[in-house]
Image (cartoon, rainbow, N blue to C red; front, side, top):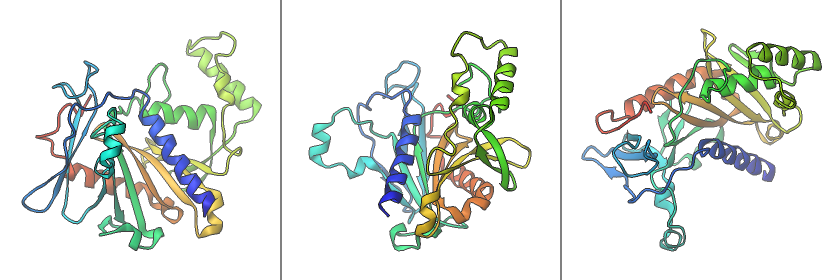
Length: 287
């Protein structure tokens, strides 16, 4: 159990590191959730805008209205007065998560009272993320480019474990050389060490399985990791990073038995968040 908890912590920390490549400045003022007349609760996720200052008109602001009974965890509300005083640089309105029950994303009063294999946790943050071209292109720093780079140039898609879901494997020397030749032909440079990252596939060097996920048209939906050592404790714990139409990404945490259904889960999560988004109150979602 201790190893599982460590694995969960590692996954979440990794996600937050990715999400905080450009860490925002603290909000001038915390905007707390608002409970509306129908019992729904409104949350705001706020990043800095082009002026590099949070709290101004160009900030990307994502306003989400979750229905009454939705289990939402907001770290801003969990801070004590002492923590607030000790850490004035805390990034207010930066992230939140919610939990629902699979397979239909039903509301749960408390996910800790439910069987662990039935719960989906969705973690969100304020950082805008563009989808991109759908393939690895330099210098494009996008959701699809980064995943394609790791899945097809650093690692390789191995066997298709479920339709559109490929288990990644480490490349051999011939494949690495072919990738270097292809990238050099694109004019991406040839100075010593330029392509050293092509030998950076960590699959097989850590206690997890990694996957790339495509939709039925072959477009990238996201990537996933499942911690293999958790299988002995009742099933693998998985995390999947997916892109959202609001130009954000999300981390889904779920039991490994649901990996085969990840495309359907993706569709349901997108529908839930699209319905929850207040587009009139939100600002600059396309940034």
